[in-house]
Structures are given as structure tokens and as C-alpha cells.
Length: 480
Image 1 (tube, one colour):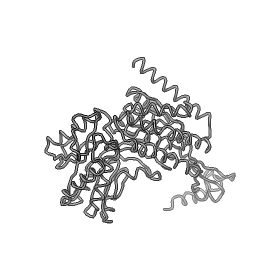
Image 2 (cartoon, rainbow, N blue to C red):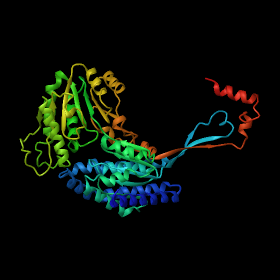
Image 3 (cartoon, rainbow, N blue to C red):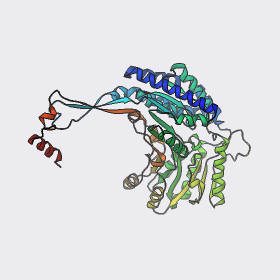
Image 4 (cartoon, one colour):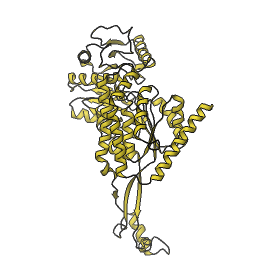
């Protein structure tokens, strides 16, 4: 370990210790304090919305400002407002039943939701504001303090977030830690009371290993290949419109982006035409279109082009949706047009790895069961999408697949429902947040039992000398 690494780790440890001490010194975190913290975060988001959008545009090379306001700013504001609206109810003690006959004798049981302490938040580059302030809303509602490590791939946005947080929060309440992979590695090794990581599965393995050294509980929000299943009963035009909207949102750089689509083989040609038409309606031009976001950097741009080269070499048909016939070999940014990939095979990289870009493999089935079997042969995804109006098929899809969440007759939209838990399963993540589920994720559900003044143990024969009362108590507990 060099001197710089040691200095970074030491500085982070000092910050964490200061936050933990401040948390312990504070004691009970009142409703008013929590509302104040949520309000300050909310006001800063609104105050800095234009600076944040400009920073995201700089970080991406080009990013649509309306898109940023919708998916990053407004979405984060919604999360904070939802927490404010429901916080008083969430904080209430939760009564629980007391075992018979103790409840009849005056004993009582309840749950108190207590803050965990200090939460570490590691946020990604694709929605750098939303995926920082969304988890933060849950952490603050639960009464915690937070240390935030945003992605080094969006440094301008990280700098604005650091400035806006430092303007209204003390370092012992919330602090933003910027820096590269070395800082990130040191951050993951801290003894937080809880840590949430949003990002790639490959990185999550390192985060989990680092957290294990201090037994830090984790929430992992990852991704994977979220499938779209289009049944024969689906409205194909509606499905094509909604799938292409979801696939081109942030140019597919979304953990919940539809990754590949299965459709009945007799509908394939029509569906490809509809997908092409719907994408062209949204983006009649692409290269200089302010609404079309670029790929975040050269490395990811090259990765996506490698998927296409690999698929083409292995026999895939590539359909580039380029209505204005623009030349993308010379451009100021890293824009890739929406691209359909047909005649895929499992040995292609595009069918093995999460795409995270505007490329969409289109597969076909003879029997719908074949599509279900294919999904189930792969790691469990973060999202799954079904289009159709066959109630039995819909129910079969829901009961015979496992995914983090599901949207029916659309894509992605379950994530914006603040009253639904958001999270993955297996390789797509663990744990969840949003709404009351986020409040509980970042709280300790502390069991409290209040004993009556009566000598319960003697009354029911629980303590020596054992007697017939003891036998009756045992028989009562052994009843099936």
C-alpha cells in the first residue's frame, strides 16, 4: 500500500468515525430532523437541476436535457417527496401479538424501526443523480447519515453533487467522496452499518468480498439480461412502440433496459417493421439530434461495436435503424443508432452479456413455452416484460419465471412506482429499496417485549420447582 492509498483510507476512516459518533451522540432521530434532511436534499435538487443536467451532458458527451430532467431530477424529487409524505406513518411503532397467555396477563410486544447508523451509497454513472438521491431518500427517511461514492465515469456530475451537498449538510450528516477506482476500493472496505451498491455484477463481487471483511450488510442493485416476451395475443404496434421507447431511453444504458425480445415466428417480419417504424418516429435523425443520448465513453462504444462485429461474423442479420442515412464514422460523440439483431445464437457475445446499449436481439418461438424455457435457462434478470392479453398465459409467465420485478404490457415502468420495492434476485441483486421497503431496508426492526408486573414464570410453571403447571404449559405449547 502506497502513501496515497494509506492517506485515502485514513481520511475515509476519520470521516466514518465522525459520522458514527455524531449518530450515537444524537440518539433518537426525530421526525422533524428527518424531514429537515429530506427537505434540504429536495431543495438542492431543484436549485441545481440545470447545473446537474449540464454536468450530465458534459459527462456523456451528449445527453438530452429533457431526458435528464425526467429520469434523474424528477425521479429523485419524487422519491424524496414520497418519503416525506409517508414518513410519519412509517415511523410508528408496529404492534405485534404476544404469546398466549402472556398477552392476557398484561405483557405487550412491538417493533421499533431504528436507524442503522451510517449508510455507504455507491452510485453508478448511467443515472448518476437519480441513483444517488433515490437510495439517499430511503436512508434519510430511516434516520441515517450517509457517505456517498459516485462514479468516476461522471466526474462533472459528481462535482456538482458534492458542491450541493456540502452547501446544506455538515460532513457528519452527508458527505460525497469523489475519486477513481482506488478511492472506490477503499470506500468498499469501510465498516458501514449498511452499504448499497448499484452497478455491474462483476464489480458487485468485489464489493461483496470487501464488505464481508467487516460483515457489512449489503443491498446490491445490479442488472442482467431483462427479457421481453411478446405473446400471440399482444397488440404488436403498442408493444413495438413501448419496447423501442424503453430500449432507446438513455440509449439503452439502463439496468432495466429490455435486453432481448421473443416473439412468435409468424409475427417476426411484421414486428421488425414496426420496431423500425417506431424508432424512426421518435428519432428521424440521430447524429445531431438533441433527444438522442450518446454512449458514455469510448470504451463502452467499442464494447457495443464488438458485440455487433461478433454477431455479424457468426451469422446474425444486423438492421441499423438510421432514417436519415447518416454517417456515424465521423462524429463528435459516441452515438450508435438503434440496431436490431436477428438470427442470433447462444455463442454470440450479445446473447451472453448484458448489452447496456441500443442494440436489440429479436428471437422467435414456435411455442410460447420455448421462450419461457429459454428465459429460465439463463441467470435470473432484474426485470421481465410480458406483452399480451391472454390471462392464462400472463399468469403462467408470472408463476413460471423469476425476476426482480415485472412490467406487464410495457417495459421498465415498475421502477418508477415508489410504493413497489425495487431490487433484483440472484445475479441481478439482493435486497430492495423505494418507499416503505427502502425505509425498512435502512432500518433495524428492533423487537421490544414489555413484561407485566406479575410473576409470569411462577404463574405458568416456567421456573423450578417444576409442577403440574409446568406439564400443562408444555402440553399447551406442543399442541399442533
